[in-house]
Image (cartoon, rainbow, N blue to C red; front, top):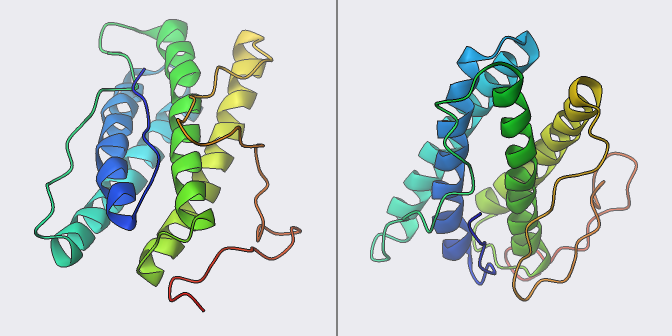
Amino acid sequence: MGQMHPVASEYDYLSQMVPHHEDAITAARQLQRSNRPEMRQLGQSIVTTQTAEVARMKGWLEQWYRQSPAPSPSGTTMPDLSGLSGDQLDRTFLQHMIPHHMMAVMMSQQLLMHGEAQHAEVSDFARTVREDQWAEARTMRQYLAQWFGQQSMPCIPQVPGMPGMTPGPFPGSPGQPAPTEPSPTGT
């Protein structure tokens, strides 16, 4: 499994998140072959949402970081699912996409908590990624338990320089205290 590097800037976040999303899109497309309508719907949702998010992030990188290197994959975190079918496809996807989503949650949380976002749009985007992917990870855990009797969470990737993160709900989520994130403008 690929390793996430600590997010040290808004550029780091965007340039890591683009290939991370592209990896998820590639894997999610394989769910078109799933026998379960829930999995086909999940796959289509990931493809649609993350394709739009990749376009948005690439636009920001072009607009704000034109002189910086373009994002490039640092290793895939998803296995090749093309040879799998039936339960094997669904289970393998779920077992790998949960920690994959959690990497995106942690990257987003790291950006927000360290106040690294330079633009309000990126702060809003990171909050959306954090909340949406946490919710999808919970749904995927339910599928693993319901269909395969797997109650434990697949391993969460370790992030160098970032101590363990307690899974959500996150500050600012409904019913949670207001966030203590620094504002993007430093105020």
